[in-house]
Amino acid sequence: MSGLEVVIFDWAGTIVDHGSLAPVRAVCQLFARHDVVVDEATARRDMGLFKRDHIRRILETGEIQQRWREVHGNAWSEADIDGLFSDFQLLQMEVLQAHSKLIFDAGALGERLRRRGLKIATTTGYTRPMLDLLLASAAEQGFRPDLAISPDEAGGGRPHPWMCLKIALATGLSAMRAAVKIGDTPADVAEGLNAGMWTIGVSATGNETGLSADDLAALADCERKRRLEWAECSLRQAGAHYVIESAAGCEAALEAIERRIAAGERP
Ligand SMILES: [Mg+2]
Image 1 (cartoon, rainbow, N blue to C red):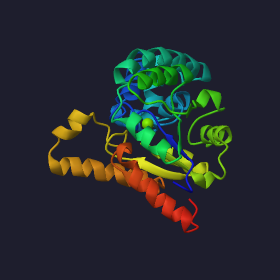
Image 2 (image 1 turned 135 degrees about the vertical axis):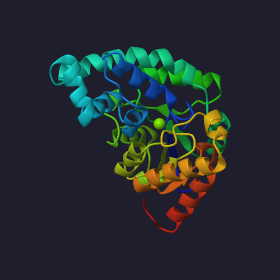
Image 3 (image 1 turned 90 degrees about the vertical axis):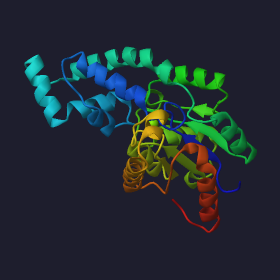
């Protein structure tokens, strides 16, 4: 492939953990321990952000602020965020291994992309220890990216472009338009756009549909179609250049981007 040099994948809901279930479970459990009920929709709303920022966004929700005050007698503070984030890291590590299965044969995809001359990189909302757990598990399953960056080593996470910029520097990217960001949340799309990269959203396997492969397959056809259309709409509204059901099928979109680059287009 000429024109594209690097493909940057997200992890949960894109490469591993169909439906991005692990972070939702950890976030809901975290708040439940503080007698604050956070429903799944609220837990998913800001998915993709660095987890510390994600916890803050949930606390900033009107009804959650009110409930926190009822339970704790005062408004949440920065110290509460520190405590919640600390607890979250333990909770998330406990459930992560169980949700580290590859969604598809990402190892084979990575090899095909490398044969086209592309480098494989990743970004995430997880911390470095969580990312290391996923990297070890993915390597056992055959997927080994060339480079993986976490928000805590880039000065912050999505929607900032900084993880993507670190990847651009480390891989010697010739221009930002020579990279593609692929992910399952509006925050992933914003990250790629803020970095000046092409973006591909994934609808069926990710947070916007929010179901395991089995649960998605068990839906009635019309309901499955409705959920996928909703997910696609959400990712397109965020500005994704392409939306595909799974990153497994990204090669056609990558080829379309190559043609647009060849025609002189920019993201
Ligand atoms: Mg994700």
